[in-house]
Length: 117
Length: 113
Image (cartoon, chains in turn blue, cyan):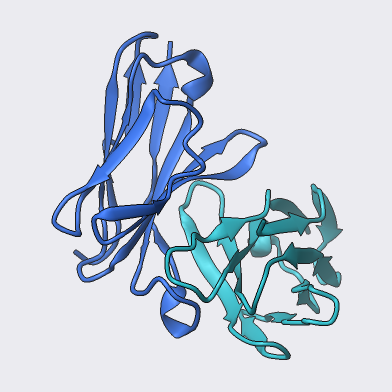
């Protein structure tokens, strides 16, 4: 597609329920990132994919969070047993290359605003 | 580890004032450096970048120079406009496969007329 697409754009869920957030990167982009943006907290790195593997998942805050990427394209971020502190905007980004240099510009989706009530 | 430190905001300026937002980084090797901007109600977008020491990135009147000796990438603009009001994020990426793009906490800029 023309840009990074994320769905849903908004999600309200009850505490304790599981949620799945989807990211459709730009076609041909091998690197994919998930970030979380909380009010006043900046951009928190969650996980990074290169192809289908995740060389860096150091930012996942707990074992309730997991992510996968299939076919080197679509990625899903799953949050199990959601808590109120999980409320945030979840951003996905993709880039053409994983190494430094001209190809590393990351393009961001519009994000999914998750509210846990 | 790799990290980015930005000056805390908010930064409040009058139109046509000079802007500096400080950014320093910690990283091994020679990372690429970026400034991203998030306008109100919009997604993050790349503002400018520099991929090696002494490079100057520029866009929309903004500039930042990659200073390896001071590990800095300060963002500057000579004359800000109301439309520049946004949150600005400094970021780095090491030039090595398997490394993520790391962001600073962001600096909110508010420009009044």
